[in-house]
Image: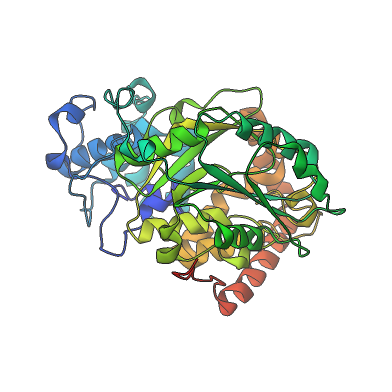
Length: 445
């Protein structure tokens, strides 16, 4: 990452890593087109010229730059003042205070830290006031890929959610793009094959006896005939142009992965996801990618069965291989969040909130994922940042008052939380010792 303080605020973010060629995601400022630079803010108040450039590079990625500009392979150290200036501009002031406390507690010079903190106190957040980088040719783009009508395989695993699955399949019946098949791996009890007769779709269903989400997705991908794989879920709603929007994105940006955007039922797409950008996450509930990608990186890691973050781990493998993924707001879908079935029945629905009082916190697969790719130190920082906020239910995660209360409550029940984290860490160690369970997709599939 271009600024050291990001290790406290985004310790396990994809963009902290370099791909296997040694490249970061951040473009060198001198390599950016003038049309992009004019959309960004040049801040001459940094003490270091490096910090000024790094800030611009950061803005470019956050505001949607997608291109082939040369990227940084390493970053020079910048002054403490510049680090505080940067996080003041791009993060909530509460997180700036959080960083100060961590820096002082980790024995950095307290006088130097406090002076820089105070000197930057007048700086307000800037990124939200800037406009995303536009792609004006996108709407008039004539897609050759779309015109060639490649077969798309829509993959949907399901477990005891026929009422929700019905709505998704009805949405697929309305698609403007028609050359697709639907592959459903059904783990429901009782299994109802007659359910699928009601739909005017090319449906291939597989009755899987074992309740295993990642096995289900892997099985569906093996049975897919399409050149393109569209990943969906049984409790989402999609627009009529969902498949078309994914294909258009792949073609326009000449990338291997289109990462669709989720938003909760009754809400709108979040402002920071409402424009095209380099994807900072991968979600198996809304994405399209070339099937050949699985030949390169393998299928999903079954260490995540009945747990969480298997899609995040797959996204990391894409990133490390240099396979670019674009966050695509045009291919958005509504996340219904079904109250029954799915991971709610087979395992852990929430990554950080355990199902019982003394159960591991977070779910062991989360720590397995963090430690495998980011190391122990970054994992500890991630736990410091996320575990206290997980004391309250998921629906309160954006309620500031409740988050503050969660922090206080975390101190009160600290012994219990420490025991939960210790259990999770030990279970993650077992997973790490076993290693990943990633099957390669053979050329025959």
